Image 1 (cartoon, rainbow, N blue to C red):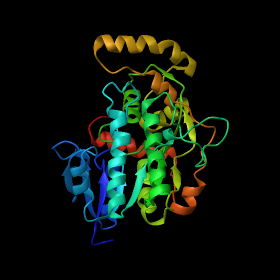
Image 2 (tube, one colour):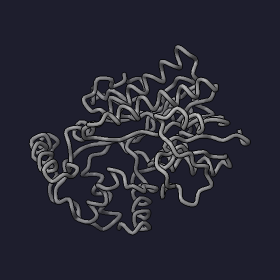
Image 3 (tube, rainbow, N blue to C red):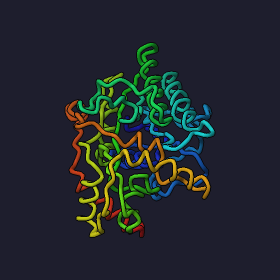
Length: 329
């Protein structure tokens, strides 16, 4: 494998740039498929071969995977508002089809990055694990598209012997957040005192570095057709904000509203944002995404991929240091 390339689609993204760094640490030759003509800031200074193109372009995908031994498919479009142009479904489902088909034709191992959002979380009173059904009918197009993409990969494994393993990360925290992410921007807004009140929503978080290491291990140790949940224990925003305040010295919000308040407020926040031609502070899909099970069971990933999630406080400390380096905090 050392004399071959490994390919990462979406290698400049939140998780992709962390996976690229782990691969380089292992001495591997890395090729990245990224849209746009410029090198992403997340890959600045890294010794990787860049292929500029979309996962929707069969020719670009072919160039990216040619001569590779393993393909890590991380390219995705995350959108918790509307999918007005159909690009969320196109990138997440049709893009996965292009990449999986290219791997199938060349007999390559595929590590497909799905999401905890691809799984049906109900009932929330039961632990989340790999046995959950896919959320194929979820109202949020992002959740639905990730479920459909995972189903597509499973079908190719079952019916056409595609050599693929699936990983399902939780909400990513920690450094290397170059965009920053939706979660990261929320932490920065909290730090700068822009959020006097918060909805006391819940999510299960995982450090991007721990997830990246487990994804790289999945290429060698993951069983074909299996799903591995890579997340952590769920926390409410009140708990996360308290940790963040302890680390950064910022003030915690004076008011935490229950989730049902969000459903009362969201029509007004969305309408105001549409009038102002900007993104809404939160949307119905954000509210739908902000539920979590009572616990998350990652024992399978611990056993087979040596997944070792670190404490959230450690991740938040390193995230804050990263944001300071970027001049954002």
